[in-house]
Length: 319
Image (cartoon, rainbow, N blue to C red; front, side, top):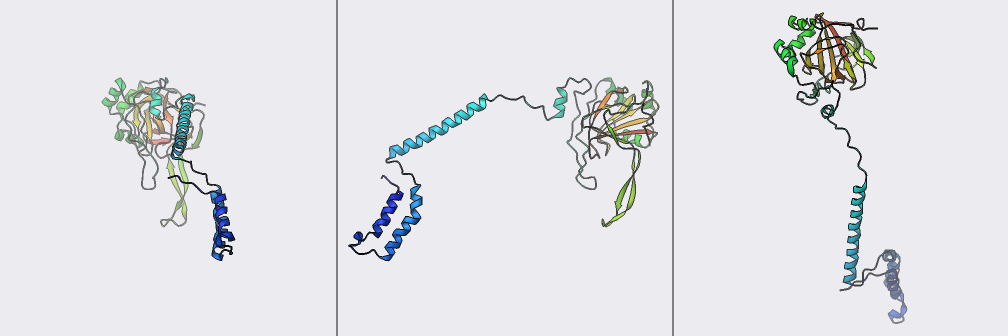
C-alpha cells in the first residue's frame, strides 16, 4: 500500500472544506466544524509544512536507504585512510623507570633490581599517606655480595643498630682499607631545607581543641632539597653496609661506614645504585633524590653519626 504524507496545502484544504458553505448544502457550517477547520490550519499546518514526502513506491524507498548506507561506508573508509596516512609520532619513554634504566647507557645505573612490593603506604594513624617505597635497590652480585653475606651486611637489624651505636669492628676493618679524602656536599645544585637539632612545632591539647604550646621534635640530619632524580654522590669514601627500604621512615636508604668508624646515611632516595659490600669513592653517584619514607617532598635526608650519635656534618664539607 502506498502511503502519502499530507502537506501544508492539504491541511489548508481540509480546513477550507470544513468552512465552505457549499459543502454543507448552502448553509453556514456548524460552529464546531468552523473551530475544527481553524485549529487544523493553525496547529498542524507548520508540522506538515516541514514534513518530507515519502518515496512514491517501495523501490524508491529501498534505493534511498541503500544510498545512505553506501555514503556511511564511504565515510568510514575515508576516515580509516586518513588515520593510516597520519604520521606516527615516536613512542613515549616507558613509564616504568626500571625499563628506562635498563635501556640507559649510564654505567653507574644498575641493570638488575630486587623485587618491589609497590608503594607500601601507611593507611592508618598519624603517618597515614607516607610510603616506604617503591623499593628500588640493585640486586647484589659478585665478590661484594659474597663479602656482605659473610660479614652480615645488608640485614635490617644490624643496620638499625648503627642508629644507636658504633658499627661492628669487622665492618670498620673493611673500611680502613679505603683511602679517605676531604668531605664533599652530597647533592649539587641543591638548597638546605632543615639542619640538625630540635624543631619547634605547635602542639595541641588532648581533646584537639586549641594549642597546648610548642614542642620540640629532634631532627638528626640535614634535609637537602633538590629535584627528584638528581644524583646523590658519596660525601666520603667507605663501604656500603646497607641499601634497602626496610628501616621505617627512611625509604630507600644507603648506609656507608668510613675508616674512622663514622657512618653516613642517605635517605628518602628514589633509587639506590649500590649494594652492601661495595666500596664507594668520594663523589661517586650512589643514589637518586626522591621522597620515599617520611618525606613530604623531594629531598635527601643526610645523617652523619659517630658511635650512634648524630653530629653536624657541615663543618666537614670542603669549602
